Image 1 (cartoon, rainbow, N blue to C red):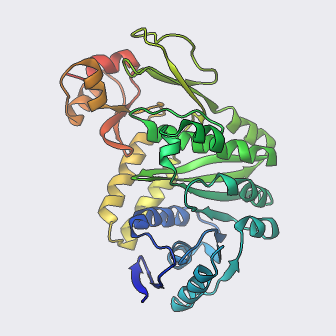
Image 2 (image 1 turned 45 degrees about the horizontal axis):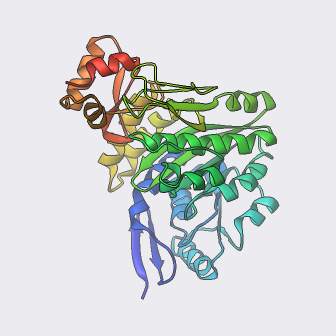
Length: 364
């Protein structure tokens, strides 16, 4: 018996044996908003389409999605996706087979990679495909959070060529490791992969990259890759081209290094503002949650500091009482520093204050 689904502007039937995750609706919402905020006319590939829900929503909800191609290894999924496209009165191409082969043979403006686990095995062919365009977009979801967040250190070294950090802001490190991998994969094709949207939620991270041609641009993005140094004693953190060696300058504990990882901006503020405007018009079921999340992203995007501070962790390390988030923000702002909430964690803040001032002002 098929599951009947209504999501966004589409209706679908999902038979047994075809993957559909209702928990990813929010991700599909914000991803569709991001695509709609890009403008232009974009040929879209949903590389691991399953039921087809993501790609069909992209085409149904966005006028700038000029064409849609759906792809999946599963023949049952391909048949389901084709039927769902017809159900929504939509013309699209449907490909059965390995998406890497399709990426070698066809050209697209917007490539969506949403696999189970890591998107890395598909990134090379996606970059090669997008290299034929002056500008394109790569959208990647990673669900291997235990790997990216440091629980499986060896797997992160193998899959991403990076050492992770198992700490209170591991989800930010996760997106920065993913971004570095995308940048380094794109650069040999003279493509500059620049993050324009970053979303961390529950068991996954979603990133959308602007992919622009130009050797100098590509070099510029590679120069934004560096290493992090972190102290498990006092939560000191920094990111720079070459990691700091030795002991923490604040408490003397041995520092742990991580990376390579991307050290630059994670959002394009103009894209976030357009997404907010589109969200008002679309009336999604989770519109209020989306608005709150996008507003938080917009605020934190104005503070380019690496590594948010979790107030609970900071208070525990310092042996002091926990301040409310509002109180911690007020103290930092009163002292003349920028400080905002972060969408990565409800008990954390992002601030321009140096580490010593955070220790002084953000705990009781």
